[in-house]
Length: 246
Image (cartoon, rainbow, N blue to C red; front, side):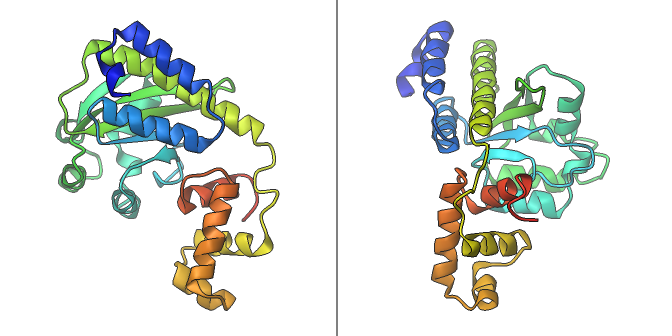
């Protein structure tokens, strides 16, 4: 991946698009996005569905991400999504854009400018870019890269925009192939996911189900793999969306 950065944009795109076409699981996408993020000098990425105006949490909209869990928890706990200028811009435009955390959050309607800037700066996410995307069914989304590097160049923006379109399309195709996710989940795995969705920790679930904490973690890890997700948070989101848990 490191060698690709020095290639001309068109040749770089061609090689990356060839790799995207080979993806079989969402974890393939996760590994690819992590490598692209690092190759372009960024720290983290997020692939997300564009949140509806009634959506209150970023965790419910993210499809794949390596954002720090504590930042996501803070973001949702403080209710920062509803007044996000980034999300508002994504709703009103399909043009990719770069951003600086301090500038784009200036004048937030909820008055939480300082808290947002401090939280993102503490995680080395001062600057980055968002790339609006959509799939064949018309579902809108966005892919972001964040870090401490200088703003992306024009050539980098063009290349990443093309890559992001293919990544989102690949994810859509993978979801279509996965018509009955979790078909082989056991009752215990579903129980553990259900209690996780209710906000219980592994220790609390163990007490409720009269199991060891180790066994609960084992069930959750196995359910995560069966659902083709990268962590238990994503497993819960997918299980909720597909009706496996309510």
